[in-house]
Length: 296
Image 1 (cartoon, rainbow, N blue to C red):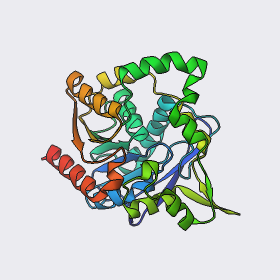
Image 2 (tube, rainbow, N blue to C red):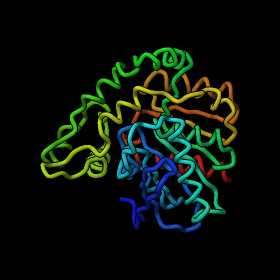
Image 3 (tube, helix red, strand yellow):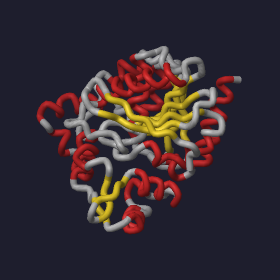
């Protein structure tokens, strides 16, 4: 468990409020962390807790995730990245004005982190992206043609998310339902409990997902605009860590990026798309060693 967390909230220029947490301000370098689609930052507490011995941690929950407002329709990947910049600039200037800053994110959050770094080169000192879902160029071309016709709503991920079960009698029932199921296959039990405890909320009849299935589906049915041109101009030193059993396009995109942008490096680790939930302690150790070496 992350210790002495402070909850924050921020009224965005877009008209809704987002929320998150940060550890005590100590003067250490600070990690800005963004979660994957359907999750929230505290789902990753088993990985973040050991990192908090070496870094301050700032957790930002994106529109419709965690305790952040749903905020009406999904504003898109690029707009949400800019809203994250708006939040981070406010808190970074107030709390961490003179320390190294690290952009870190998983999956959807990894893509948003890359857009933040690309569009604001001085915002972060380093980037660490955990299995970012960088759609390869062929996938982007298909998405560009499909989106105006609404065909992305019928992708398997979008369909499954929209029909996802969202309510249970209690947290134990939810844990048993998710245990080694689908995306949660291979997760350590503590990590799954973090999901059950932080990504679900109590209702009059039991518990339900904080992130509405329609929001998760809307994200899967969309894509970031100008992704590869953004990645090609990224100048912040960035390291991608991806699971060797993740989606094939994650692996191919990570390898391609190393060839076209010298600021980006990448390596594979054992695991699936959520490898950091399968082995959080090892992932934290690897990230700490990476960032320590870069500062040495």
